[in-house]
Structure formats: structure tokens, C-alpha cells
Image: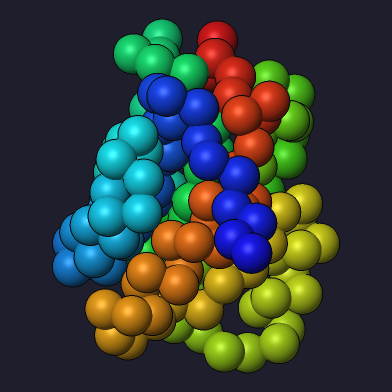
Amino acid sequence: MDETCPPSPATVLLYAEDEENDFFFLQYALKKLSGQVSLLRACDGLEAKRMLGAPPAAPLAGILTDLRMPSCDGFELMSWLKTQPQFASLPVIALSTSRLERDAERCLSLGVRNFFPKPNSPQGYLHLAQLILQEIRPHAVIGTR
């Protein structure tokens, strides 16, 4: 039985990702599994902070972040998010090519909901999208201001 909790009709996720292909592969997989998911891209953690500080066009259901990015990496973004009470109920999911246990442990210590390794195949991205949808709950949707 599929335990994926379908997202609410206007599920919007922010994805801090510097690699364009990783963004588009995940975007495609999420749309294939649920046409109700909109994925916004921030090219690094600094852009994600700017986007989160602006009045939202739509409420966010979650934040996805790569770990290794220029300017402000995923660890810095997660540390900043931890100090922002308005994002306390917003699920944060770390995605990385890193398979190091210490990276996963560091992410979890920073309060992320989960840490997933990035896949290297279309089937892997579909599986990742399914895992992300299971982590995002409709009650977690909040405005960013």
C-alpha cells in the first residue's frame, strides 16, 4: 500500500540547489507523481534566505536544500533556519551526493526532518520524490511572513 500523503492542492516547496540538472530532475519527478507540487529554485543558501525573507507569493510546505553550494551552503542555511521561529514548523529536508554518515548526523543535529542522498538515475529521482512527498504534510504549510 502506498503511504504517500498527497500534498495539498497548492503545495509549494523551496529547493536551494546550485546544480540546474538536479533541480530539473527532481521537479520532473515531483510533477510526475503529483501535478500539485510547485518547486521554487534558489541557486544557493543566500538566495534562499532572500526568498524566505520576502513576502511569499504562496505559502511554503517545505524546504529542500543541497549541502554543497557556493556562497552559503546547506549547513549554513539550516543553521540560519534554526534561529528563525517563523520557520520552526516548516519541514526541512537535506539532499546531497554525500554518503558520509557525519553529514547526515550534522543535518539531523540542525533540525532537518530527513537527509536523503541524491540519486543518479530517473528511477532514483522518482523514489526520492516519493520520499519527499511522504515527509511533507499539508498541516506543515505556512506563510513565510
